[in-house]
Amino acid sequence: MKRAIATLAYLYALSMLIFLYGPLMVMIVMGFNRSPFYQLPFHFDLIWFQKLVTNERILVATRNSIVLALAVSLLATFLGTLAAWAMARYRFRGKSFLQVILVPPIAIPWLILAVALLLMFYWLKIPRSLFTLVVGHVGVSLPYVILVMMTRFQGVDWGLEEAARSLGADPLTAFRRIIFPLILPGLIASLMFTFAISFDNFTLSHFLAPQGVSTLPVEIYTSIRKGFTPEINAISAIVFFFSATLVIFSGREIKFVE
Amino acid sequence: MGRWRRLFSLIVLLTPSYGWLVFAVLAPLGIMFVFSFLSDVPIGERAVFFTLKNYQDFFQNTFYWRLTAKSLLTGLYTTILCILLGYPLALIMAKIIPHRWRTALFMLVIVPFWSNTIVRLYSWAIVLRKGGVLDLFIQWLGFESGSLEILYTYQAVLVGLVHGYLPYMVLTLYIAIDRVENSFLEAAASLGANAWQRFWRILFPLSLPGMISGSILIFIPTIGSFVEPRLLGGRTGTMIGTIIEDQFVQLFKWNFGATLAFLLLVVVLILMALLGLLLRQMRLLRGEGG
Image (cartoon, rainbow over all chains, first blue to last red; front, side, top):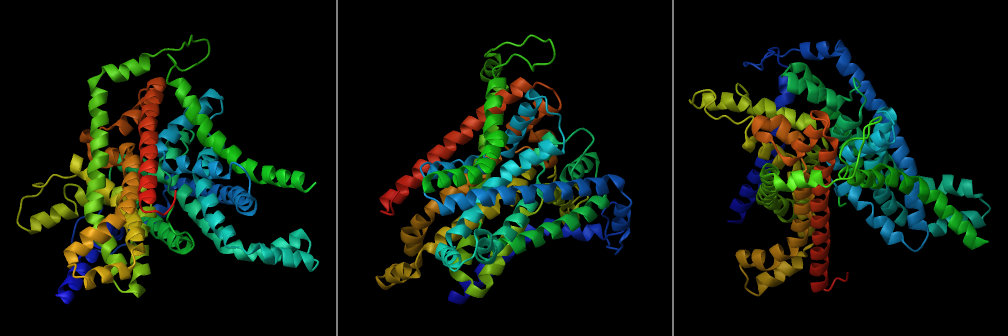
């Protein structure tokens, strides 16, 4: 009886994994199939990856996405870490309020935030540009950084810093030698996590990118609406493995509770 | 001296982040609210005045009522499906599978969730389309090609949504179930409770907060979804989210779009407030403090 239940449980878990991964696997495999119409039998071919290398639009969109995600992850992690530092280090009035207002940017559907930003930039007469994209992406990334780094800072024993100071270390040295190594895992996780948020974000970019400029998700979306080509499978396969790697490495740090 | 220095540090450390959040999140929502009462987008010399017309257009047109109902129902269906599919998996992860496999399974559940939404939906389009893998499988079973038309139906939208949001439910439920001490269950068993009673009397009630958090995390983004309906729903995929996108991208009726988005925001905020209250009540009842 117990054995039967265990077997059933494993089968169920397996079927859920097939549901979660099946379509993605099909997509990746089809990226290596010679037929442009996804015909079987399967003939292994790298032709779609070769075509990808000469596809100017996708290459430019990929470069845009990487530049944007780098800028967003550096900015969000830096600013968010400062705020988390203050929240963990000091007691002050209004702290719980500051924590509560981190929830809306996470919980409100991105569609609403995106159109609201579009309206504000229009009203301020700021043309859509890399800047408007960065404003939006950093805005939705900051709460995650602050939450993750606050947890990190709360684990820091501030007595260590005081000890270093009393032994003659100046504030900068104390930070560099004591605090920084302690929060480094959180910093790396935040960088990777916010990079993933920005790199994968379609909704904000869809509304905030300037005319004629696209990020990779926007480019893939446009191509899908035009029709199916295996080149998209190829780039999607690369994107999938890339995101998966990022999440696995940052996932150790972030407990995904928020 | 110390007090001023402290205040100074706090301001220097907190202003950049919170200033950014005000500029990128709060201010735009406020401006959206104002736009929803304007007669037109202010361009050049055009006369713009305050009006309730956008709200009247929404409330007097049953088309938008029906779409709102459809979006809310879609959120409900997605949430229920995620609970039904996710509960057994969370239970298996927390109580049945050996500890050493747990982290691996945990990671496996998370990865597709953080993978690109567009890529995920594209992969479903490949599987569900006519001549796609599912169609080939149906043919292999001996049915005619296209006898199961799935892509560009409402069901396809649900599949895409459930696929995207299932991990939320599994994770929040896993955390809740994992917290239930095995000793509770053993105590119940030693007092003669069978597996059925142990589940319904102990495990299930204790996992409810996790289920509620998971539900709200799924329900809120689902009612505002527009990419899933666009890519998998075709013409049947019109929802309040796609209508909002239309106002901005196709029709340039930005003020009406702002009205729709603001009304959606109100629904979201009400739901969040209700959830907060509900979770607090449950914690108070259990004596865990507020």
